Amino acid sequence: MNDAANRPDLWLREVHQDAVALGFRVVRSVFSGRSDHQQVDVVETVAHGRVLLNDGIVMLSERDEFVYHEMIAHVPLFVHPAPRRVLIIGGGDGGAAREVLRHRDVERVVMVEIDALVIEACRRHLPKVAAAFDDPRLELIIGDGVAYAAAGGETFDVVIVDSSDPVGPARPLFDAGFYRSVANLLADDGILVTQAESPFYDASLQQRMLAHQRSLFPRLHLYLFPTLSYPGGLWSFGFASRGLCPVADFDARRLDAAGLALRYYNAAVHRAAFALPGLVLESLGGLLDPVPL
Ligand code: SPD
Image 1: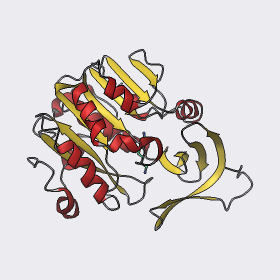
Image 2 (image 1 turned 90 degrees about the horizontal axis):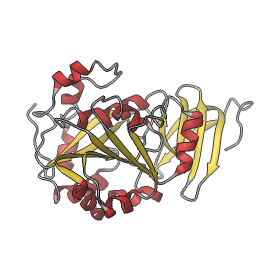
Image 3 (image 1 turned 180 degrees about the vertical axis):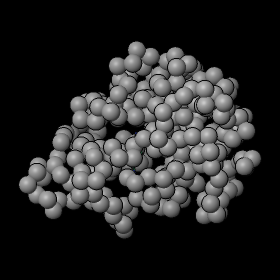
Image 4 (image 1 turned 90 degrees about the vertical axis):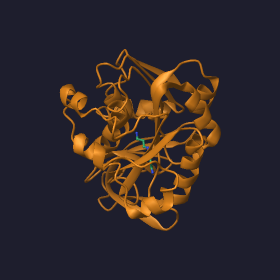
């Protein structure tokens, strides 16, 4: 990416499905590098602060990353009755780990990220996102999440799959074999949360990934949140468990007692995120369990 300091007309344009585009006016390129896996860029934008891109696809913007990372972490951690061991697959920017590690009772977080360059770029150029890498409870493994899960060995209370889109290095993170391996890593009351793309643009992908999860987990849900940074403006996470219900088993008192200063997630947002609009029920209703709302 060229230095755009003197080019006030420079725009970053993410083209989605060759049909729509999301644009950010760019101030300058902050970092640009290529790893064995992908192109990694950080750019300064006029309205969204710094934006991280993998292969030209927006991964996060400083303006709204807290919404995504609060929702991917706190939803499962305030449903599981005593989350101590958490596995994050992907999430190399560090945002999901930052939120997980705000839970004082979490004793151990293992993060398996395939691309060391993403971590390096975020540590240097997005330090508020990559704020928790030095926490002694975090073990960072640079490696393939699919191979890590298949190898087994350790059991986790919560597994978070903070992946990019199912192209390039993240493609196998949407496959049945990967979910089978992850199911084997989960404790009996474990919870799996997975990045599940856009309900507007990716319905058939959601059907496929959730059908794989449906065959492995007695309970399966989808929850929603807004995004300023991904096409469509509405995004989702899958929630799978062997019995815990994301609404009935949600511990709002523990959230209250934790006293976390959060900017998006709260008890009402937690419950409301599981209320699904007609278009989602139409496409995924047959795969998902109902929640008491
Ligand atoms: N379309 C891009 C979806 C990317 C989702 N994951 C972003 C990682 C943030 N930690």
